[in-house]
Length: 518
Image 1 (cartoon, rainbow, N blue to C red):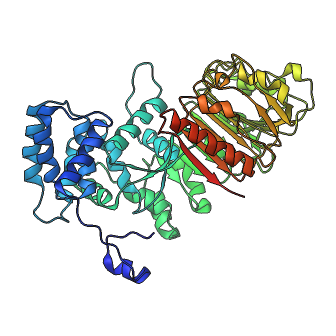
Image 2: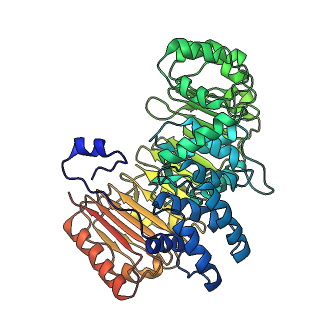
C-alpha cells in the first residue's frame, strides 16, 4: 500500500485511490481518550471538555494524537483542561490543512529541558530514519542533556527520548528485539514546525552543520570545517578534507571517522569516538580524559590493545567494542575501565577471560573462534543484564553458567553459541529473563517448562531449521507478549500457533505471533 497526502502522486502510482474521510467527532474522541487514558476510562467530569477538544481537531488524526500527547502530561483537572481548550481554539485555523499553529502548541507545552532536544531534530531531513543510539549521543555531545543525581547522562537522555515519543513529537519506526527504540523519525508536518522554530532561535544554527558535513560538496565541507573552531560534532566521509582540521577543533565532542589520525589524541574534550578501520588501539586513546564511548572495527577479529606501561591509567570509558581480549594483560588493561557498562570483544579459541571485576557491566557481546579450552574456567559476569554470544561452541549442558545469572534480562544465542542436539533447562534458572532469541543453532530438542522462564515476554527463533518445536508448556507463561519465528521448520511454526491458541483460551489477547516460512 502506498500512502501520500498528495493526490497527484497517488494517481501516478495506481488508478485505484482510496481517500479516507476526516474522523467523525466520536472517532476523534475515541482516539483522544485511548491515547490519553490508555486502557482506563476518562473521568466523567472531563468527558465534555475532552469531546470539545477532540472536535476542535477537525477530524485530523495527527492533531488528535499530538493534542493527546500534551494532555497525557497534564494533571487530570477540569479547570486545566478548560484553559487548554480555550488556548487551543485560538491556535487552530479554520482551514483543515493549517497545522503549524496547532503543532506549535506541542512545542510551547514542552518542558524547558526538552525544547533544545526537539529543536535539534530540525537538523535531519524529511523522511530520514534516525538511528536512536546515535541521536542520543549527539544530544549529549551538544550539551543538551542535564545531569541528574545518581544517573548517568546516558540514562537521562533515554528519558528525554521517551518523553518526546510519549508526546507524539517523535515516531517510532523500528524497534529492537527487546522492544527498545532502534530508529525514529518526525512526521513531515512536525519537521516543518520544528524547522520554523529553529529559524526563530539564533542559538540553534547546527542544522546546517549536520547537513553540510554529510554532503558530497567538498568545497562546502572545507569552508564549513575551517570556519568552525567551536564545532562539537563531526561525522564526515570527506576524510582528506577534514583530517588536517582536527588541530583547530578543540571543542570536538563527537567524532566518526574512517581511521586513526595522531592528532585525535589531542582532542581533550572528545566524548565519543568511532573509527571504522582500526586494527590496534593505542594507549593514548584509552587515556583521553573525557572519552566515554570508543567504537572500533578491526579488519577481521577486532582491534588489539597496544601493551605498554602507560596502558594502566584509569579512564572513564562506559562502552567499548569490538576489541580483542587474548590474555591476562588485556584483562589488566580493562581493569582501568571500572565504569564500563557495555563491552563487545573477541577472543581466541583457548582463552576465556573472567570479567567479574567490571562491576558496572550491563551489556556483554562475545564473538570468538570455537572455545577449545577447559569449560571449568568459563565464567560470565554476575551483574550483566544483556548477553549476546556467537561462535562460543559450548555444550548445552553448560547453559547453567548463564541460567544462574541473577540480573539477566536479555539473551541472544547466535551462530553456534552452543552446540548439540538437546537443551534441558533446569529449575531456578532464567528467573528474570524477559527476552530470548535463538539464531542459527543446530538445536533439535528443547525440553523446558514455564517455571524455567516465568517472566519471559519475547521469544524469537530464526534459522533454527532442525528444531522440533517450541516447548508446549510456554502456553502457561502469562507474561508472553510476542513469539517470532523466522525461517524455521513447520513443526516450530505449528507449535507457535498452538501456544497462541492456548494463550487466547486463557484470556491473553496481547500475545502477537509472527511467522515467516523458509
